[in-house]
Amino acid sequence: MISQQEGHDNSGFAMVMKDLAGAFLHYKNFPLLSMACTGRGVQLVNEYMEQHGFVQVAQWVPEVDRQPNLKIEAMPRYVFRNYDYPEIYRYRTQAEREDLLLDTRLALRKLLEEGNDGYVYSFWPDVLTLKEIGDPADIATYFRLWDDDSRLLSRNIVVQCRQNTNYAIVRYAAHPFFLQGFTLCANGENTFFTKNMEFQKSLFRGYIGFESDSQNFLYSLHYVLHELKWPIRYFKHVITPLPFAEIEARPDREVLKLIRESLAHLEINGPNTIIGMLPDSTMITCCDSKKLRPVVVARDEKMVAIASEVCGINEIMPERDTARDIYPNERELIEIRNDLEIVRWKQ
Image (tube, rainbow, N blue to C red; front, side):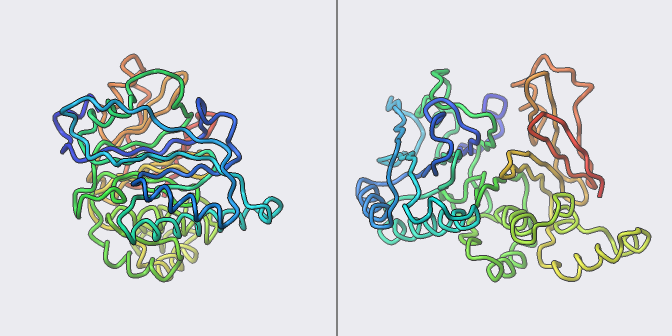
């Protein structure tokens, strides 16, 4: 936030936190509902969750700072609740539970949209999502994010200090985006938005909204890893495939040609950097096929961080060894594992 005060457009702030501590430390196995809504929205959600067998086990309500002159379009209520699964799901498979959580989030979103009563961002174990419109620094003041009070802590965080810039300013459009354990934000634009969107609508019921062209990246990541169950290295081949002439010279050319032929509508175009987090907390980053947007990966002894501009890294890791910084090229996908190992996949 601090390093980008001259560059951001004062439109919003959002973050997804995973592997939570603090107030959520003892509820990691219980799905956490993250939403912002009206008082009526809270009532609607209460009724829905009770009718469908969910039992609330914990709740954290942020103690907001309502000082005057903050540039924030605050919602009346912010709800972060852990629920136990309905009785009939306690012994179901992981896939069945994931389907339940997705369908519940989609149902709650539709329920709140009907009366303009709020927004549901995520409903997933050990994941918290916060999105708001306004000046990022003022949003942080409002939610007391500058305070180190040990209540809002996590091991992995994906954050962006601006709202969507290509379409309407709405909370759902704020990066990062979340779906079934997958988190993603982007810096740039996708000029294949319409082509991606029309194809993705037919692939999976969770691919909805499309308030931002960057949601295409999340849905493609989810489709490649969750639905097709391919290794992460193939994600880059889907969104930025190699030219046919280069494919022909490779020993895996038959696989790569099939990818291009079957998933051509998931190819992206335009300047962009993608930063993502997978369900197992692995973090990834990659660039467009021409490297038109910057990105840097840096580390010290306790942390690895990715930022679309090096000024952000300089703010949080001023004492790091800059010689170890990695600037991914247009043919790479960087993977950061939970032991902080950095793996560079060459396309």
